[in-house]
Length: 522
Image (tube, rainbow, N blue to C red; front, side, top):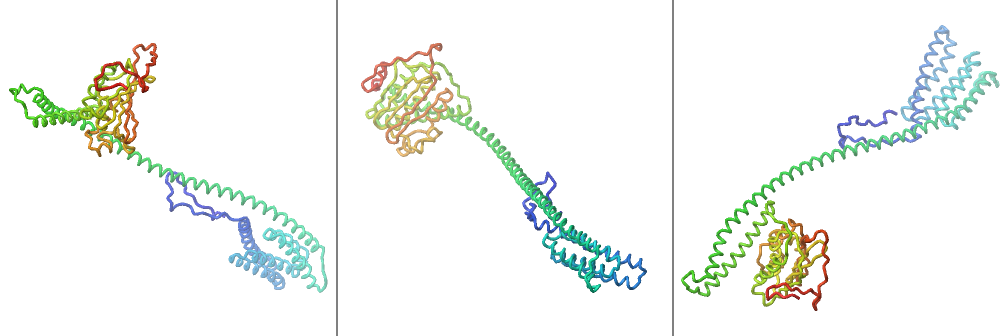
């Protein structure tokens, strides 16, 4: 049975490759297991019997001195037994187990019967007692029914051969007693055979459990080793990816620093000649006395106005790029402090008139702000810059309707809203509208000016001031950008309770703060 056990790898360090996996081994059935045990036993029996027969024959020849009659009497049954043992071995080689059992049993029975007849007094008195031993041994190799048949054959042989030899029916006392013992041996053989089969079944069931457990453990080990190999491979990949990310991060930081340094240098180099261009253009337009009072032709004035406008626009872009590079490099200094919003909003509203420019006939500048205005925490210059960016965007993308500034105090924040009736923001642009150098597709289609930096800078500035920015928009109907800043309470011990203001006819609160004449409060 040991030949059927699979050989498992014993090393715990070396993983098993797929080609080394143990092939599936079929667990033997109960019948084949018992048959294998009985076959092994019969194989041993016929060899021992053959050897014993040869020894007995040799001993008899030595004892009798080779007297012819006694040797012949012993030679015939021994020959029967030897021939039966040899045929038994041949049947076993051909896997004919039951033929081998019957050949072994019948040769033993015939040899015993012949010795009873030819053995004289010794054969008559003692040889019949071989039958019980024979039936007991052989009965363990065959089913109970076959054992009973063999008992009947022994009965016939034990009675027939002596009777034939004597010429009459002979039943001696030793023979009778031997037959009785044969019957007892038959019963015992049947009982023991049943017990042996029960033990074999129990052993087989335990063997099956052990095999199932072994196979499960073996396959679990294979799966674990494969998982470990995959994990090692993944770990190496992750480590390599981390190294690549680290190198990429260093390269990005270096590129970022180079970019910031380059932008700062270029901004400085560009602003110097731009300021000169803007200054000379402004002087030529506003102070003709410096040129001996000679009036400039109107065509020249238009060109100079274009130069002045383009120069200011280019200077704004350069300033935005410089601010963005400072934010990236972490070198933008802010002075966070309590801010009175009144002068900031007043200045923004004045500047908004210039941002609208020639569209003033088609665009109303509205406001909806409380009085008094709440105070916020932030950098005054940067708050003004963010609000102007919002107004600049609204003016670029609004051709008619209105642009409205809304201010509200909600919880611990001051909320600014810049609402317009412009072209709106497409759904595809909502995720990228705050990225650098990105402009909405609707704006690009209509040829709007701008570098796409205003919203990106505003978002960065608000983050540095612990604020936030978001928007609501409907394509073709307009956009509202909301800006939230932390609220400042002059009396930190007790927050003031806002008193309700009387509402105008359209539901918005009136404002008494002085604003430019062409900015109305709804």
